[in-house]
Image 1 (cartoon, rainbow, N blue to C red):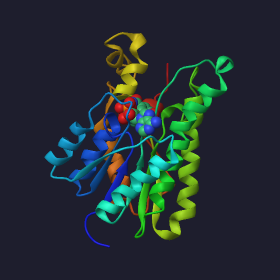
Image 2 (image 1 turned 60 degrees about the vertical axis):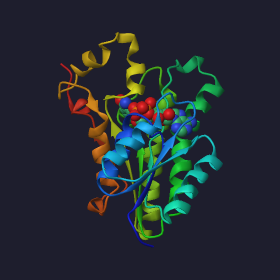
Image 3 (image 1 turned 120 degrees about the vertical axis):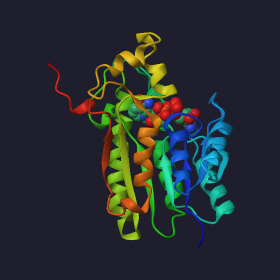
Length: 254
Ligand SMILES: NC(=O)c1ccc[n+]([C@@H]2O[C@H](COP(=O)([O-])OP(=O)(O)OC[C@H]3O[C@@H](n4cnc5c(N)ncnc54)[C@H](O)[C@@H]3O)[C@@H](O)[C@H]2O)c1
């Protein structure tokens, strides 16, 4: 096997996934830009940014609710570049629902993306990692650190991915494959902007005032940590869940 490492990133047309594609490209990683048919964001923007960073990318449509779709994503990259080294299970959705009114379908639909989609991405990637590798899953402070009212399904999924990466770290450590989770706080992306809509157009800025760092995070600030975890520089970091939140979860409320 030769050449630059290759990464698969789900949900890479926007937000943290798009920033991760660029960060990895800057480090010489060829990136598979997983894009979802229902996403209004144009993956060509991510591809252009990857190329502007001097990198190489390939857009592949993928729905993490489908095992076949995720497997084809990984196989497409391997057939193009003959290797796969990094899987970033980033795709996720956020829905609000009180717990005693949630339907089985609503519960299942969220976990199908946010937990089972992560499992499918990790599994598809791991099968092709021949010379070590790295899996990074995106959790959340909701579930990863805190509970969250009216979001029990989301928090359950995000807690679940931490259990998953810990188990993968143990199972695949002997093969030189690391697995970690990122726990973002409040990051300015399409998902978080939708979530705080009820606070008004300046909602994210106001929410940032409650964070010790004085603002919400940028996708790039999460992507840098994902890129580090995906790199050989993180060679002894595995089974961890790393919080990237501007000290939000560290702060004691008066
Ligand atoms: N933004 C935040 O404050 C925050 C905080 C904690 C965790 N997260 C997590 O970060 C990850 C990235 O989210 P983001 O904030 O960048 O928002 P985002 O909406 O920009 O990204 C989510 C991506 O997932 C994709 N997606 C949705 N359903 C899919 C499916 N079935 N198959 C494939 N792709 C699908 C979307 O197309 C989108 O590109 C998510 O897992 C999210 O839960 C975000």
